[in-house]
Amino acid sequence: MGTVPVTNVKGDSPLLNRRQILQRIGAASLAAGFVWTGDEVASARDLARAARVAAQPAAPYQPKFFTAHEWETVRVLVDLIIPRDERSGSATDAGVPEFMDFILSDEPRGAEDTPRQTAMRGGLAWIDLECQRRFDKTFVACADAERTALLDDISIPPPAPASSLETGPDETPALPALSHGRAFFASFRDLTATGFWTTKMGMADLQYMGNRYEAEWNGCPDEALKKLGVSYPGV
Image (cartoon, rainbow, N blue to C red):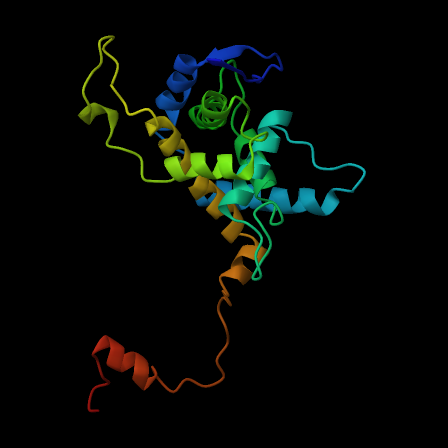
């Protein structure tokens, strides 16, 4: 207990303890979160779509950024956030894990992870560490009820910024036990939603029809005008 294996970008598997994991996610996720430009999102969406079209049953998609264990964790986690229902497929059906992998692997890869890569690796490691603490197993190995219990605890909004909290004996912010997990999950959930609702499946789920040609325009409907409390001049 107290450590969890996390494969780094070089492929080896150091053991990170709770303090190291909190340092990684605290240094990146709380400060920056997962924020990408519209162009980055569009590029990752298109690459993910192409990869899914090219993938064959005998040769499934191989992640470029995520380790094998992280990939499995991401696939379980995104489907808990957006599961399959009668209206549409799940996040994995829409290619959200591939979207995340492309948007993260597009980051510059140097001696150290970028803040966004660090936030993702640290956050996934935190989830495993918390599951190890509670249930003595990783998130993927947990039962559905155990996963739900953890996600219920970290799905509420993150607490106030660290600067407004008291300082502990070692001069580090005395953060509530789950604050790092809540900050990570809020960003991860947003990224999952971005990946899902920018796909054809996600747009269909929203019943988004886009711009449509109207052969004849007779003005704003009366019902809409009444709701807005306005009227055409002279009417």
